[in-house]
Length: 71
Image (cartoon, rainbow, N blue to C red; front, top):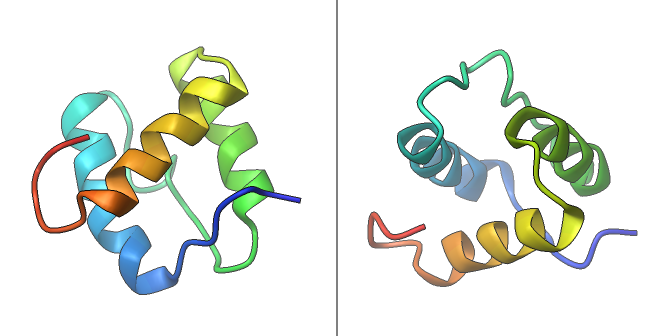
């Protein structure tokens, strides 16, 4: 079970931040359905070639700094 919860509304904002940081990722790469956080994390791990801890840290940071461009 994932250590975070991301709503579809929050994901739209987080997705923009991730695409800014990893400009090779497309909307199709970043498909997400609320409640499927584990699948999202696994997908991001493969796409950015990072470990689970890094992906979780990045997503948590994006959630905390929702109103900024910070990631």
